[in-house]
Length: 461
Image (cartoon, rainbow, N blue to C red; front, side, top):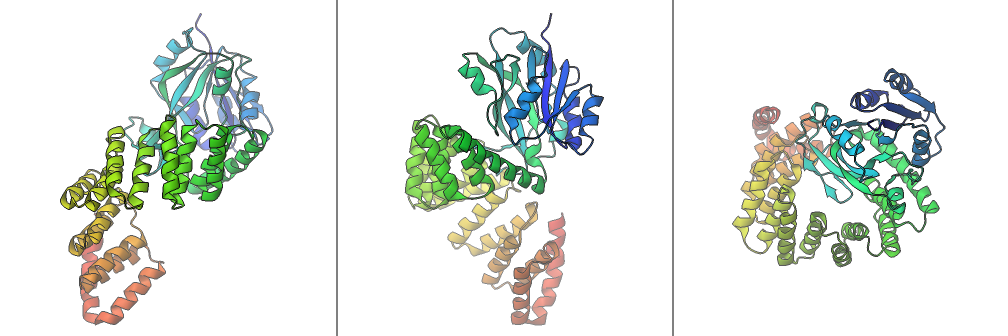
């Protein structure tokens, strides 16, 4: 007889995403148990339409407690844990039965593909990758970041969720001497690509729960690390984040990822020598990742130690050869050691491969400005306006400033005109345009209006 599989979830006001999640497990799970923590929308109705047993529980600011309430209702031999903003990959239908029939594992680490809104995003120390997913609902997102968590496990009284936030059953499996395997299917997560207010609300909640978790588990280095990441990534509180990371390192000096984020916090505080010290410890304790080596290169670059930066960036590229950001950083460092054309070629090659990536465009422009190749910088700055998805007021100001430096007042004025079409309420652009119009007179202003039409058409194209 094949083992039965239950889907276990906690939900609240998830009507917008729950149907897709439950549809993805149709025909795969034998049982669905959903704990609703106080929905005011159609979430319970949608769940019941898929045959779920819905239990209503109070929300007690504890994700592990809520998940364990749902887990207690499960009857099947195996449990699949999903969130309402996640879907199971279609390949899982053929792959999960083999995992359930195996006697070698009591739980499985599952790769979770988190879709994000930019290639510049990351999760912990993991950079985003260009999205190549064949999943129809995922194709609108430019990038994703992968991580692993135990989402498939046996129903066993020794296995339950731990942690008020960032909860998992993984630690219980390991502490109980049970075997943890690795699954061969994906879970797709869309929550990180939610609207800004939803993400901000979640961040505030996670921050408060993280503080509670640290109070409850003061000797747990992971709890301090998690709170530090919330302070670093979501609130920009560098000093508070650094204190959390340093406490995690004190509690577990071999926790390489904590050393990395301590190094990153020092870097953002401008404390580059301290950053290098922490990054060295991160590499020593098993965290010699591309992110660690890249940040090492960044610290050397900011210290003006460019040969060391070149070496670090080359090493990081060996670990992440697909990274165009690293290629462009290496180009900057190569320029600073005097190999100008070689460095520019690296930056230009990165831009050509991903022209809409604003960070790459900025490195090309800044390198040309530093080299005092103003005509090329002006062309590059206006080129960025044409290819990035959402040019900022600063982008228009920089382009106009470079044209003004060359004495091309009409072109500068035209760029400001277009900037105000896109950012009509920006006071800095409006002031700059007024000053140029007053200084250069009506003839330049009239020519600029003609050029602005040309620039605007190119931007729309």
